[in-house]
Length: 566
Ligand code: ATP
Ligand code: MG
Image (tube, rainbow, N blue to C red):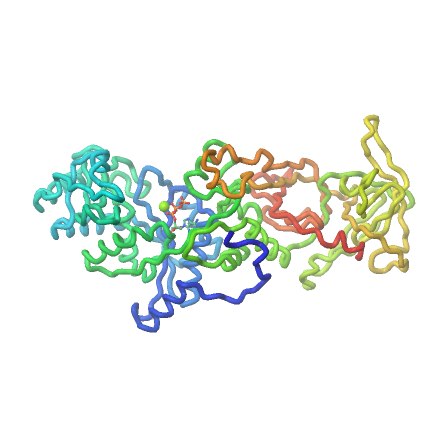
């Protein structure tokens, strides 16, 4: 595994220059682009962006930022059948949120359709493109294989005039889908199959989300992409490794047209353990309701991560940590979670929350008081808050055990435990219902053990969190686990990834209790629930009546085991 949690060096922000930076440094030295650096992120608006796209955005934007260059957002909207304005809107929002600053440079490949058409005509005139009537199946048959050369289409030697006429009529809608294509005339015996007269235009009678019914011929990726880069004056066209074999084609078109010719550079795409990443699969998960939308917090999309409470800074750090490689690999999802934890640890307001409440009555306590709690031990400037304490509190059911195993340092019958920011209590009585379930503990406290000011030197091994019953705020908490049950779904050759979905990826805790500090919170606010993890108020299900929290990521529980220090 390329990136695993054990070889991550905490907060090492030392920037290691990846091979793309080396290429750019060299270009600047030789003045190849007159000192310019211009990158782009070119999504097809056929789905929401995922964490792999985030890597690409961070890389492309990061380069523009580091070299004081420019970064474009460009929609590669060349296929009307799968694209939608909803996706365009979500992509803009996600790129902005992630910090990819494209300023006012949002472009659409569909705005270049006229120009692309003109260039296609130019190639026809040069004798470098022709209209083929072969149906897709015949064309496939004539293409040859890796070991056998292809066969030229009978239409390959049409006259330029005939090609110009047919291409014009293709554009004018005289033919049905699939009846004709425009192909580049390159080499049917090229060892690179992609150079065997690739298709440049196909007929698709479909309404486009931006150009409406103006066009019924649409450019293919290979034909369109270099032109888009060229029009925008891109210098470094960075894409994922699977496009390496397409590069000769990228170069061929630009050379034939003799227009601005960016350098295509490939890097390894991001794969994550326990995750499927292709938009096709993510769309399937949404459409078949395995999740409740593209932003379901179990999805690997940017919108899901945002809703779940991930921060843009943490995702940027993640992109930095994993770096850029030339070889495909799979990164542990734990590396991403580590980056999230590191960031949230520095930023998060701490509160106490009891997810599975057990009532505790402190029999010798009278009245009520407010205790001082630290807002964030990592950031003194975040100060303190008051937490109400009273005779009745909730503790976590799992913090009490009647028959504890060895090494259980929390509450047991007759045992003692420290209440975080409060007192040491002793469990005197265990109250059960008719089914024998523990429903209440009667405890006593020792006033001298008050956190911070108490004079007692008594020490206990465990410290637990709690919430005062009277002031407790009710909420629902949603706990997420991995969406898939296996590390590398792609390696399960004979299984559909849908059969690998974790049936317990969502657990809803209906009745959690929170300290009243969260009363003024708004959707999207993030907290650390002490000893539990990082949580964020859900933007979708939270209403005036009901607070809903998402668990962003679990916490490594350190302080509860450190001997009950305050
Ligand atoms: P998918 O294969 O996941 O459906 P895609 O490649 O079809 O995605 P595009 O909209 O074409 O999606 O991608 C936009 C940009 O994001 C491209 O430059 C592509 O190389 C890059 N990209 C897509 N997936 C990843 C990934 N997993 N890691 C890094 N970059 C990626
Ligand atoms: Mg694609």
